[in-house]
Image (cartoon, rainbow, N blue to C red):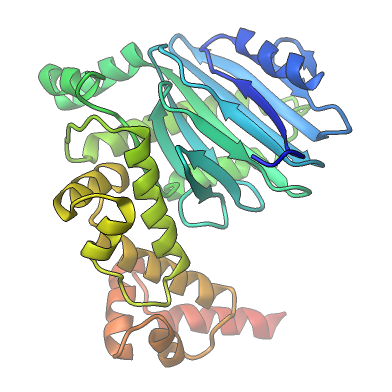
Length: 339
């Protein structure tokens, strides 16, 4: 961390007393044991904490920082898990171990799930709105729900922290993104805000359980170094989407692992193979470039992304998004003409 950066630490609990850690370190203001208001010299905005139901709480952060800060979530032995959703206006740096992983609304991966034993550091951008939500969940509550979907034996193995680490990075699914965008338009002072936050948390919890139940069960005890090494390679791939796939051997070497180990751990964390992850991100980038008007020629875009045949690019694009790239381009061109 640089010397000019303000650093403060905390660890979550399911009840509101954990907020005192932040209030004391930042000289912030705590209102009704729910709302934290930042002091003006650090930033504007604040956070909102709500106990949704026994075993489930939600923490919403909506702040714009005036100075560089590091928000350090220290590891604990508490039996709780966290789902993290980043919808900020700019990318936030999220550090696990020694690797910096960028998550955010404009980046490719904005959602993470992890246990309280894993340390995390958030470094929000300066002068841009940071908007993120965290579901804080009791292990027993999660285990009970997963037992209904996966069965008792599988559920017990999944939550056996001596032999397994429940951890993954993912995209924010479209249903969750719609909910979060709707919430993002409300201020804390709105009469309906607390009800909206509670209902959003419950829906997000339901969507998370659906998503988790679809994942293929895998049991691996991960170290922070292994997690950081995998995120290092995903960052590399996301930064080089206009290039060819680097290859499993080179990526495994970058992660400091054998190819077989790299493939296993990558799939546990990202829920896909490295090659499929890379190709999927290429298509998501193509979709973004078309929709923001960066390209008006499908062949040029296909070649830029490394596809030697524009027809094949159009085929895989349509399989992914349900429409051809030319259809998406026509919509953008029509919109531009109207404006």
